[in-house]
Image 1 (tube, rainbow, N blue to C red):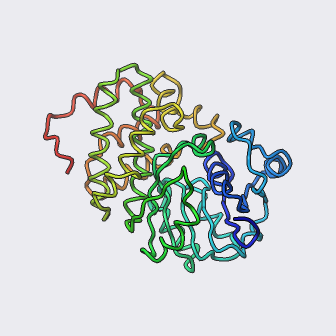
Image 2: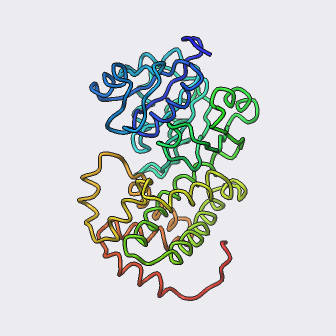
Length: 332
């Protein structure tokens, strides 16, 4: 499958956006990849590399980088992979509304508490929204290793029938859902919980503690998701539990790595200032904690991560969590 007629667009040339572009180009189609940095556009086009964000990959020659959003005007399908906090701005600058706008960023907008699908609907009301989410490390997707994701389609099965053949590849398998809210919440909450698991690793508290935190964090995800209308089956699937297990277990996760550094005693403000790549959980934690409080949802782990990011000592936070009153294990 080749040629401009089948081109698909990817907004954002970070690690995940570049990996998705590489995966989509694996069948020979043209992929238009947008990046802000002129030097990155030049490197992708001339050397077929992204040495800053995805140095492990030799990129397909059918990936064409650009810094000009006007080139996306004629595309029917666009994957938005910009950092969650910049999604609204980038979409507002997009000159036209693609028929299908697939959101691949995981987070909640700071200041407004909006999920990404709400941000996208306001910016591009003429597009049908879908969410692509699941357990995905960028370097593995770029390398063609087997990956399964949730593709939640606001347009239902008709949109799925249109989108899934464009996105599916032999090693990249989407599963259908119509629960856009659940798919988004799973991805946003797990980023915060991954920071907490990194703290456990940094403090050398052991595998038992991390397994317990994943389980109790999953209970928080369930409580929050159901309060906002998500379906339990969605949160128990790839975009919820699956993504949670992956990102809470490896330093390949930016959020886990941030938490590990916090657990080792490094300063939160310095860590955030130094990072070239975005640990979305750090931006999501404050707004998620505020939303939980507003809705009366018990999310003690999320609240603890928020306090850590404000500078509270990691051991003090862990001691407070362990001192909480004994209670039932029921997630809701």
